[in-house]
Length: 414
Ligand code: JFZ
Image (cartoon, rainbow, N blue to C red; front, side, top):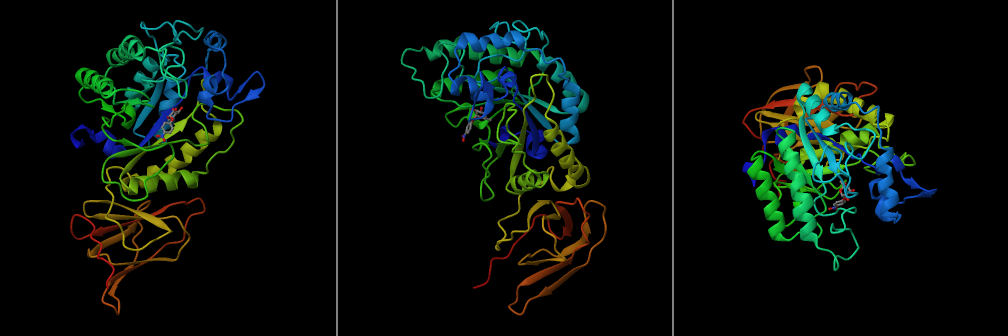
């Protein structure tokens, strides 16, 4: 499993997810009826008649879509890759497809190819381009899967052979190297079908990674449930796809924006457990990213610019024997990073076996004092005096340069 994990992904830790499609035009509402669920499911959830939904293609004209500014936003947030919905469950392709005319170049006044534009922008800014593709659910194709709707009268393999595979081939042929194909909701994919898809992807682009949702456990890493973070350091590679509000596709009624503090906490928590954080934005029908998302990403970027060393290329430490609710650890060879989310005067830690060599605040290198002693019970202890926090500081990162490559925690004594 591990040979297929690429360095840009394992070291990069943080990516931008983009959910965009015809559902973005409806923004959570159709004919005065609001959807209760995630906005990109509106066709399914409100049972919109297909011919009516397909009409939306004729209105798709996001003239303010600017690939460069979106990629730059990701870059400035400290993200290293971007995953764009080339075709979601609705079945509409967001690129020039010769396999199906139901795409934004041939069926929409827009007439532009967002993936071609993202390719150029990603190359310009050094971001890895990745593509989401809904391989099993396709609510537009009469033979595609649909959640909860029986497949008895369907011929899934005909959809799979005639739309899914040819479109995946287009995506891997027309846009240069793709970092990752983000497959989703495998539904009724058989082991043979998942294997075939994997063979095709790896055959065309051996370095292209495959998300955990290809089906039949054939992905290159584990994709968690949306917004779900494993409780302990997970032994393998994993990625947490997550929303900034409560929906993936744009919903004009969803103002449930998470705070920057919450997003940063999730990022650090996920990275400290060995995972990647794939954070979503849902552009509107005019192609722009909601302002609240832009703001949060900018604030996360301010943290990353000063503290990125404690995130990129780090590995999780072994499980610390005490429950601490004020922070998290990450590490690199010879370094322990202590992420502190609470206002505290000092950090008191027990049972760290390494000898501390040098201690400083990561954001500016300010040296700090660390008192090391052995407790009456014979355990080693560290007392680190912390500097006053800046007003907007959410996570104060302390770097301790240690003797030895990796961090060693002693068990709690009997
Ligand atoms: C899927 C999609 O249905 C959804 O629209 C969005 O694209 C999201 C990123 O992925 O939804 C899922 C898929 C899997 C789980 C939860 C939601 N899961 O495994 O818990």
